[in-house]
Amino acid sequence: MNQIVNFVKSISTIEILDIVIAVCIFVLFKVLSPSISYFIIKMFKFKTKNKKAIKESAFYEPLKIFFGVLGLYLAICFLKEPIGISDKIMQIVTKIFEIISVIVFAKGLAASFTIGSTFVKKIRKKSKKEIDDSMLEFILKVVRIIIYVIAVLVVLALMDIQINGIIAGLGLGGVIVTLAAQDTAKNLFGGAILFVDKPFNVGDWIEVSSFEGTVEDITFRTTRIRTFENAVVNIPNAIIADSSITNWSRMQKRRYKVDLLVEIDTPLEKLNEFKKRVETMLENREGIHDDYILVRFDEIKSSGINVLIYTYTVATDYAVYLREKEDINSRIMKILREENIKLAYDTKTVYVKN
Image (tube, rainbow, N blue to C red; front, top):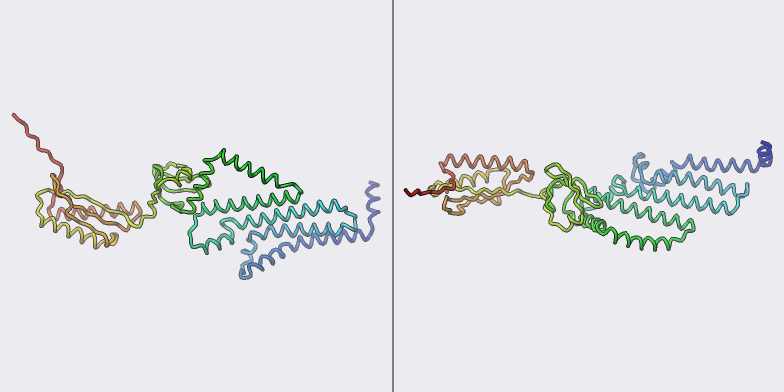
């Protein structure tokens, strides 16, 4: 207790005043840090009038932390002479300030590379190429990892740690990891190829490597597909990149094809009338591509006459296509009945010898 009292008595009035000033410097920076951060971001976003949008900026919170730490650093620097802080301690304090500054800057920069950030939204809006959310998230994760790796290397350099050996070790370690995980590396490159080529997006109905279903997610390593049996299949990206991919969701039209085998003794007049009526029916339908309608006397078979009906429907959705197909089939059957044309079927004549 006496030691504390003696220490307090040893502090002069000038030193107390200096401490008060230092505390005021810290408090001032701490209190004004939101306003200073807001003003700096406003300088770069002078067209933005929405205060909430500015405060939601990726650098707003990191700048607040930075100015708070800056206030503390300046307060310590102010007290260096009055209370006799040694140069060694000041060097440590300076390095801590620099390290915190690097970390705060890296945090703000990494936060700028997220799907919800204003920076990414602007780039995405200006980009002519549509980018899938999963692949964009993949790229942004890689960018954030690079930012944090660089920040760690800078921090190590500030701590006077030789990073040349670390970088060399990382290079050798990268070779070892690549050799040990060749399949993973192939899948990562496969994912990059899928992003560049864009053969499908999340939500597309695709068929690849004997699997068919809807794409649910595209990750670093695999693509997740939900099959029509409601099972989930994770296919490595390397396999997909090396396989033929059928994207059924990108169909512009669906083919409708029917082979009608009518009786061999059907009069040609009736057959021609049937063809004209079917062709007219298809031409008058809104859901049919008028530029490609074929109704032809296709083949003569031993069991009957084959009539080919070939066209394309506008409907690409499978359920809608089935409804369209069902209606067309019903109308064709109605025309067959009205023209009194019967369908043929395979027959065999068996002679029994007595």
